[in-house]
Each structure stands twice: as C-alpha cells, then as structure tokens.
Image 1 (spheres, rainbow, N blue to C red):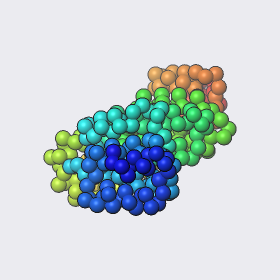
Image 2: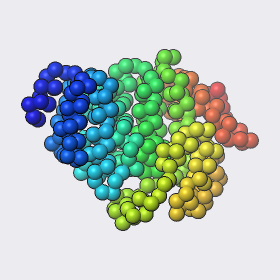
Image 3: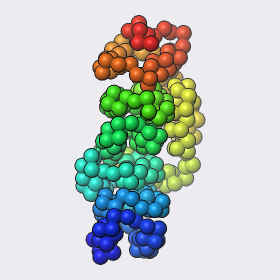
Image 4: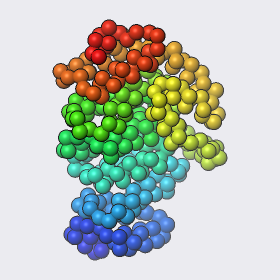
Length: 310
C-alpha cells in the first residue's frame, strides 16, 4: 500500500477530494490492477465513512476490476472470486460500505460464482443481525444477491436460499422491519416452491465460445428479474415468454411445464409448515406468504396444514 493510501487508512474518512485523487491514480491508465484493488478493499474495510462519492467510486472500481476488465465481460472468474473473498476476510467483518460496493458489482454482472453470492448473503445476514431489524437498504441488498446473478445458476430460488430467508426472518422478527421485506420474502419463497425451471446463464467456458453472439444481444437482464419479482407466479411465466434470445422457444415450453408444476406437493407443504412453525410464531411475513400462495393456487384449496396457519 503506497504512502497516500496509508494516510487515508489512518484518517478513517475519505473525502470528495480524496476520491478525485484516487480516480486519477486508479483509473488514470484505464485499468485497475490487483495491487490497486487490494489497497482499495483494505481502505474500505478500515475507512467505510466518507463523502457520497466514496462509496460510488468503490462500487465502480469493483465492477471494473471484477466484471468489466476480463473476457468475456460481465462474467466473474473463479480466480477473481477467490481473490475478492481472500481480501474481504470473514463475512462478519465486512462493513456496510463494502456490502454496497459488492451489490453494485453484482448488479453489473451477468454471472458471478456461487461462492461470492453465498459470501455476500452471509455478510448481509451478519449486518442485519447486528442491527436486529431489516431496513429498506437490507431488502435491496438481499434482492440483488438473490436475483441479479440468478442464485445458484437458476432463476428459481434454491432450497439453501429459501432456508437463508427463513432463518433471517425468524432471527429478526420486528414490527420495525421495512414493509418491503415481507413482500420480498413471500415472493421469493413462492418462487422457490412453484418455479422449478428457469433461465440459466451460460458458464464462462460457454460464454467464451459465444462471446460474439452475446455482444450482439440486447436482452434486458435487469428487466427480466424485475418482472419476475413483480406480481408473483404469472409474472414469472410472462418473463420467460418475453425473452428475445435463441432460447425463447425452449423457455416457452419450460413455462408451460412450470404452470403444470405450480401446485404444492406434499413434500413442499411439509417443509413449508415446518419452517413457519419452527420458531413457534407465525409472523407478518409468513402470513403474507401463505395468503400469497392461496391466491396462486387458484381454485385449488391450500393443503389443510398450511391453511390452518392463517
């Protein structure tokens, strides 16, 4: 770490003037290298506070280094994922400024390794538990990590992610939670239960072969995930059918298969009832989830064990 960065580390605050100077130093040659990125991560770890431009700069630098510089653009390598996690250390030690920088990075990625998603969610969990409440910023952080990178490579929320959401909901049940949490919670769990088939981003190896094709596409990835989280299961079906990619026909067929699969199975019902009752309470977010599932079931009544929770 150079003398200037060490001085910033000791003062514990990054001003607008500091950011302008770092922009010239870091982006002056149009490339962020490993040493510069490691220094920035160290600085953000010990000096998270600063003028507004500091956090924006940190997010941009991470997106450039981890997402934009390597080919194919938009795909984070396993090596860079390991480098990031090594620099950040333990999830409980990651402060809010670094979490928000990671959120910015993930928003600009087509796909990041699952280890980064898991690390980010764990860091968010630690942050939420320390405050004992889920605010609007926490909700957006969670939403980004769950949907922007497609979870574990599938648009459907995985069982591990659903367990994470339930654990968080049980641990931080508060009337002070932002209302957006209940909305995200119910839609994400419903997605896990009912959307078994989804959009699968190509691997880095596939993307290297198809990079020319990818550069010519204008698919609105953010719009896709945004539509998926608005309006429940029908929005998921519509999102599949709107994709203007060569996979359009396949996604249409998958959407029809998912429509057939949307009725809750006995196994899903048992898991859901067990999760809701595990802490001995049925809180607002869980009530909203059950009510949402009742709507999605249409004319088919909810399983008796589930309906009894309302």
